[in-house]
Image 1 (spheres, each protein chain N blue to C red):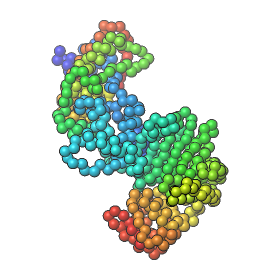
Image 2 (image 1 turned 90 degrees about the vertical axis):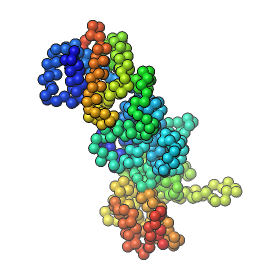
Image 3 (image 1 turned 135 degrees about the vertical axis):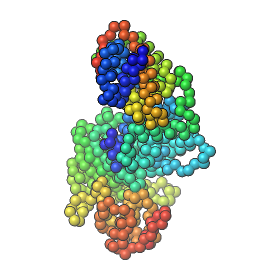
Image 4 (image 1 turned 90 degrees about the horizontal axis):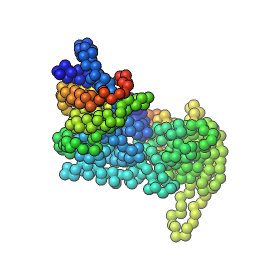
Length: 186
Length: 348
């Protein structure tokens, strides 16, 4: 990542910038979509952030915590876009902020389809904020501290939300269905 | 079930790497107490929670808008205009204008006509260079104010690019698929080589300088081809079309010369491609041409007020100097005067 940022800053390398964009765009658009009303608007927010990144590319290497910086920039831009509070909408069926659990260890399909469906219902049944925090920690690899900073909430809140998410999703997994357990540790 | 609650909390901390040394033994004890929850947690860990993915072509489109919008310095808009609309407006106007703006831009050219379908373009602004690697591994350094387009089908072996401006190419070896660069006036065919091609649409002269390997340059208007040896350059000077186009007269054929490549007087290294290393080399160059290079190189405007000065020739080389320094150097070579205003440099 540092190399990529270096190439962008020193050579104005557009291909490197394209790589940076495709690396982060999906997760940032998802993040923005949880804060604004539509997917289009979320794309616009993320594009807006990248416009500024490109304009200030020479200063990219100066940014100390690049990931936190990116998410924070998206958050601020989203708030400016809407001048509304975080999480304006809490409808259950927000298509653009839904999550889809997938099996990632291809060598064994461990989980019955039915069970996957239950997990999917459980994750999309979580309050939006809780779901977003879960995704940021589990899939985007942000630390509690980063999530707290990016969403402007306390670390304890992040901790509590993750606990709720894990417990809800965990109990959606039916252990009586026969499948082998993967020993997949992060 | 407070214990189990505690377990989930500690598992969450483990997940994000925030488990402290003090908490580790506590977690181990709890794990033994609730083996089922641990299994559920492990299964969760083996799942990935994906969101809707943006299709690649949509990403490409967004990226194009980003470059286009970034190249257009967003002027202060009235505050009552909402940001979202402002950006959209900026995008809509910026994309078609991008080429004219000389902005850094990356966009799909063409509207689905078969010839232009799926060409990507990289542009460098005045005052900036860009280094890129094409899908076949060919390395290109683009000089300021240049653009390079290549077909999306590049991966299928057809290696064809279009250049407007100056580029330094290190072409990846691939005997089966020649690498072809097309410019306004020449077509260069390559079989794994290093060369510099200067072909700004706005200038009448195109220069192909071969560093190593082999290239074949075809002059479009002549239809003739020239094989270059290393350290040779082919200069093509096109004649501007006659100003009065009452009768459709074809312009005179271009003047083509094959000669030894320019070398640095001090160390006989080739001067073409010196710009890649931030060296500005000028060899017996009229001030008028040099001024245009400075304009691109530093993104400034240079005006020469004295007609005779335009043809005054300069020789020298500078490295990594600010433009003010270069002007100083020029005054030591020939007695010229200059002043720097807010918008441009005037030489008189």
